[in-house]
Image 1 (cartoon, rainbow, N blue to C red):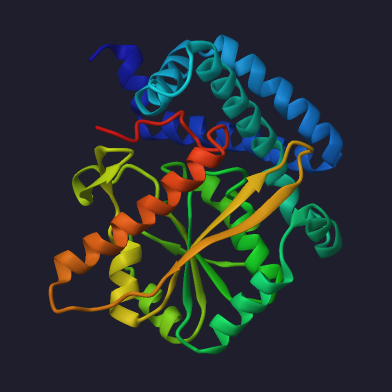
Image 2 (image 1 turned 45 degrees about the vertical axis):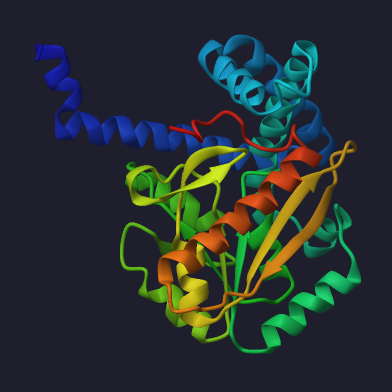
Length: 303
């Protein structure tokens, strides 16, 4: 290893680099909330289009993923148009997320379309005392889910993986201040305890679990999938709600309860886990087919 590389990887230099990155992120998260909602939507879409044209590797990955799934259903031009809208959504989400802790409940709910029956259903489900697993994916603005529950008065914990930069974790804690956090790299016993206490657990289930998951079909191809939601549902009896926030053309959001899965034990744990996981992937596939430009295709979902 050369001298320059040794210096860059030395503990003092690493700490300095991480702290400087934190200062940049802190400035961003302090400035972004000052942007109005309309400008966040307009600028975010412009930022997304710019990134789509300039970030070659991620653009190719997005197009490859979309072609893998929709190649037989869409023309090349249609796939490229969907890919560009994917980037637009990500750009808007990047500017919306820092605003969430600073907007009032009134402004939050003004920008979300939801059915009263769905809210009544959530409240009734939580009143049963078994807790609930709020399972979502990188659809629309996925960061709104836990905030939505907390603003409804539902006690929520959010599963998260801490950053390798410890300074960033201060920001995540601040931005998700309405909810408690559970570090998935540490003990997961709080998940069971909080579900048994009748609370909600918010998580994303569409990431590539690699060696820690089970291969489950996703759009007809094996995809390593985390078994955590299914495991905790079977262990506690908590229902699993497949929920999504879908961005509307005007920038507002639609809250969608796609389905509720009630875990059922048959005595064969592996079969029970797979059955639930297949149903969760089926839910996500259905929603992605309806809103293909809402999912984060900028990701290696399949090995």
